[in-house]
Length: 422
Image 1 (cartoon, rainbow, N blue to C red):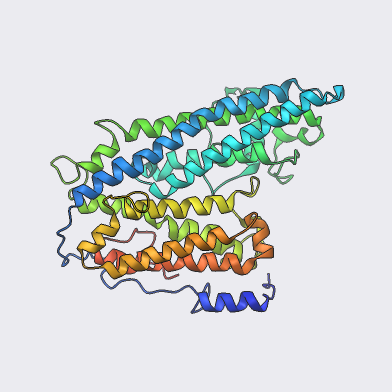
Image 2: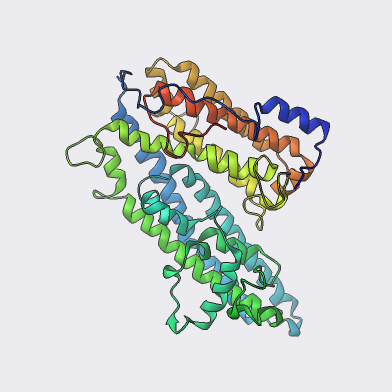
């Protein structure tokens, strides 16, 4: 598809932010990124960094998410009970208002849970990283989501079996589970299935002809199941993270005999890898792709349909949470707090200039995201230059992350970023 012509303002903004060709976001990697910078002397107290990030940043983030996730099933069930008992033919305004308020309560509970999770997305370590991120994907599989798969499982769950085998959501693929599936079930107002006629399958053969209310009830009942499964996944995360045998303890005792990390540096490297969520998922998937800098469902042009959280219109809130979590992990706590973070590590390595550039970049990225109004679908259309500016500010941070940050701290790039030239 031929890209549409951009307005002069956007063209000027993009020209200032992007350089080179293709996506035009090229930057060279640090010269020593692939060899762990073995010639750099480290005098910093790495143990203090690991303990603080584990106890005061990552653990509270996981606990906050789990708390929200574990209260979500009750909110969704409250709504579904009212939806199930509601009879549109009775024209009962009070019953309709109660149902609608309960739905809003479930949607708000989802929003709160999603904000908590978007902070955790910057902390994909340990149990969230293992087995190709299977637990992470059970919680939130975006950008690899499938609303068609969710449509199918609404009916499979309603039937109670799949080809004679009892339905069990924990045996289903991550595309049918988690926050992204729950968003579709709670926020999508269109009741027809989202599959093509070829992929719908026999299970959805009569779905579009069923009464509207029966479809709403079927969806909300599956939403209760998805919320319950999400709560279970959140508890699994806490179980694998906490306690004397949990992964948090592994990070804090890195370098000791029998520990999976032979050095504290390698443990720190796993945490620094998590910061690179800003590079691929945030910069590329959440911003560059809907801007048309990478191919999307519209081709190579601005595409509102390509944003994250398209049904809940929650993309900007997600982006803000990602940047805030990056800042918290970088500083080792909230801004202004006395805490050991990567900023202190940079100071110790005589790289205060890099620290200041990153702090300035984070502040500018936050300001650019805060300046976006409404939702990202609307902003892509009405304020494309503002979205492009946010992309550019995030890129400024990730350029520092991939270069001076890695080199000055004698760390290694994640394997997924080692050959990244954007």
